[in-house]
Length: 270
Image 1 (spheres, one colour):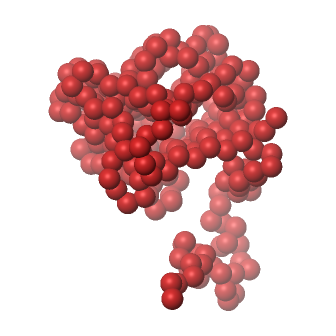
Image 2: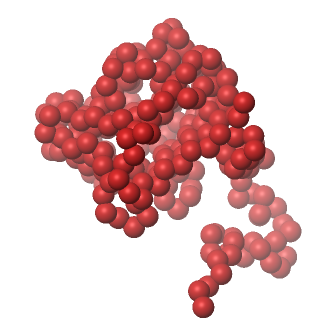
């Protein structure tokens, strides 16, 4: 008979029974009550629009648009336990590969949020990564953040809230970057600073949550530890219709693969 999974199997060993069960160690596993509420929010199905793609088969063109530069490989289903999509950015300078949700069905005013579980090889001085929410862009294979040190936006984006890394710039750690209706572009560096080890492919989860015009983002490792987070006020115009997207670019050097395991998107219903 198959084993019935319990909370112990998901990291609660020593915290589900005995004297520790009623101690503050249980609640201490959450950073604060806001984080607990935030984690539960997407599951309020009666009040929340929710979309999840675990990529268990051929990439669904009804939901996703993909693009890559010549010599690269578009995101497509790849064999792997649990399902993944994989894309490859080519070797030429600033070659990229990207994926974008087809419909601009989300907005900050409806408290849109998203999670992406992803893995790439971020190489020192030669890698760029953008993911998050944006309004209409010219091409999803091209980065939106033009210069993470003094950020501006490109690729047609006017409203966006983006988790960004650019190892070719002075700031090589992750930042939350936003533009509000084509106005000034601002950023907040994740704290503690988050920068994947150069040359190593690791698995991460990034969450971006919008609150009207404001944005929060966090990144976790594969063990579920929060590695860094950031909040940005006036990050985006909350009334603008936006798409979730993911773009990976090689500034120069070898072709490199990006993988996405699962995407979750949600917002208030009605």
